Length: 102
Image 1: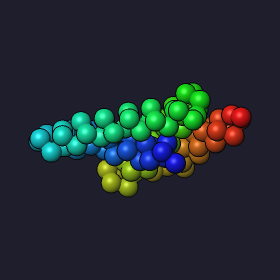
Image 2: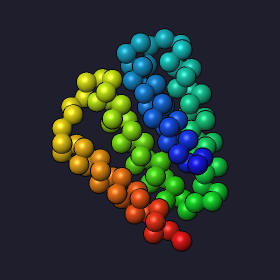
Image 3: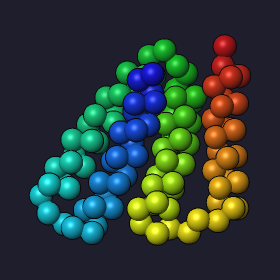
């Protein structure tokens, strides 16, 4: 559960980077700094009960898919079937890693 919260924080962190680019002011920068700390703490806590490779793959893979979806919804990134298919492959890989760990 903690790992999935970390994924959500990872998505929020990446979106905060976009906000810094769009509106360079103290609030997005402060949000990015706080999210960075929370992100690392949650990921390290999640790694206590999950192999490091699996935890990192879930965190980065689902984070990348979530950020890509947010980019399509909020920033006009390309919404194509090949992109959706490759996101599906990432999810399949993450699930496979999680299921294959004892």
